[in-house]
Length: 289
Image (tube, rainbow, N blue to C red; front, side, top):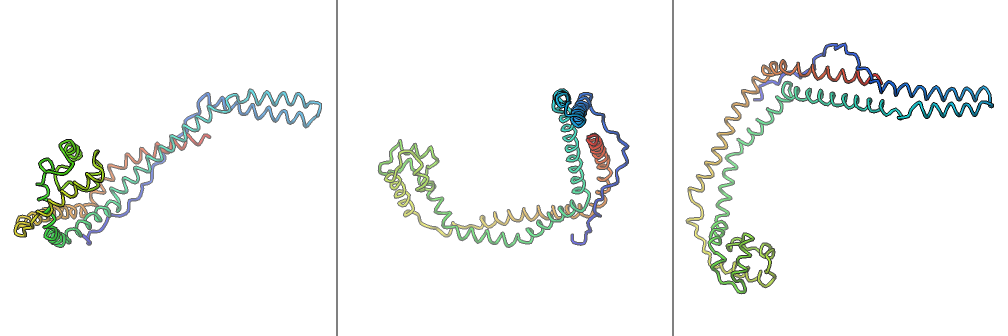
């Protein structure tokens, strides 16, 4: 796996000169622009009148007011909306183009190769640790044999048939509704959540569980059997076989990555070119502002 070389970095091909022209502004946006010029010229006219003679100050104010009022009744709203739409179209086209470039790099360039190789290296490391993990689980099973045997014993101690002070059929039904059916289910926290179980009744439940635990006798001869060991070994054997198959297939993918990249590149280029053309047109449309 270490001897397999990654493909060359993907270089974005030079896109053709699309020779695009911007989409003309709408009639309303052009009219809006004209209104802006009326506003500016009217104000300039007013200023010139004032500059020539102070006697014309009143007409100058009237002209400026007329230009201000009638030159931009919509405060260039149509033009601003047109600019916003074109900017959104450009931003969306750029986002789409950048996304395609990243996808192509991941599937064609060394990024995809490195990602696959990293995945296989993790599987290889897990495969090496399988004997250690198997032995650890077998040891853990032996160490917890008594606790597991005790739990199985407590699961046979049913609350419904037990005599517990102050815990009659009604309270037993309440316990059962909370999933507390055997001594194995009884904990102080769990019982305290049940309606009708305060400190006294909870203590009665804990005392009953303790009496069940005193009856338990550990039997080492049945706590850990060859079947338990075989089950663990089968589980890790299955996992090892899965990893072996994945490593074999993955190594083949790495070796053919360069050839596959070329075919993927041919498939991806038309989409890239279309996205680039869309972006170029959107930039042209925005340039009129």
